[in-house]
Image 1 (cartoon, protein in one colour):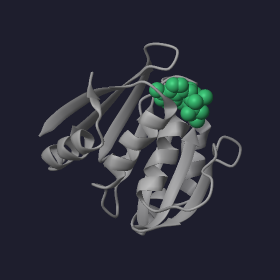
Image 2 (tube, rainbow, N blue to C red):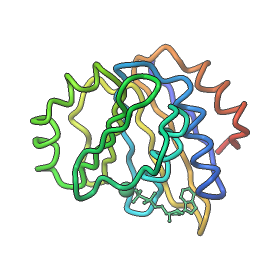
Image 3 (tube, rainbow, N blue to C red):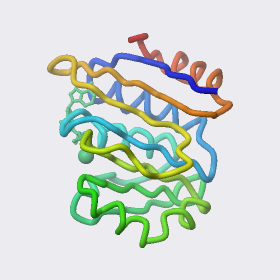
Amino acid sequence: MTWTLTRRTHSAEETRSLAAALAGVARQGDVVVLAGPLGAGKTTFAQGFARGLGVVGPVTSPTFTLVRQYPCRLGELLHADVYRLEHLAEVEDLGLAELVERGVALVEWGDVAQPALSPVAWTVTLAITGDEEREVRVQSDGDDRREAVEAALAAAGAVAG
Ligand SMILES: Nc1ncnc2c1ncn2[C@@H]1O[C@H](COP(=O)(O)OP(=O)(O)O)[C@@H](O)[C@H]1O
Ligand SMILES: [Mg+2]
């Protein structure tokens, strides 16, 4: 079943908390796509998501390395940045599909193209709606965790968008 949950955050830390809450519902093998323009908060979201998975240490933008990996409670957290289409091929060459079986993948994707990754558990789209305000849309196609995600976001105090 297709579903969308829209929330609004008012600081980077709020976005991290929301992401950490979502991570609490993640399962091994999930691919999560992060969409939105530069500066929307994709990397910020990834930091919170990593925190929610128990990653210790800093999570920085994988812009120049394409993929970073962190040990986490679901195995490995992969964090990739596909800001150019050629990068998708490179990420696939790295064996994303096999790697994700051993953990969870977060793929940052600018608004330039639609992800050709599948299956994607959740697509999180961030939109800049103010200096420190972001609209965070969590979308899923055929995922059975809508209620769990909704409850986790509510527990984190996420504000309806
Ligand atoms: N509500 C918010 N959510 C996320 N980031 C925010 C928010 N308000 C301000 N920011 C700032 O916006 C910037 C987002 O940058 P980043 O996460 O690197 O974006 P992207 O990876 O999408 O290019 C950071 O400097 C962050 O502190
Ligand atoms: Mg980024």
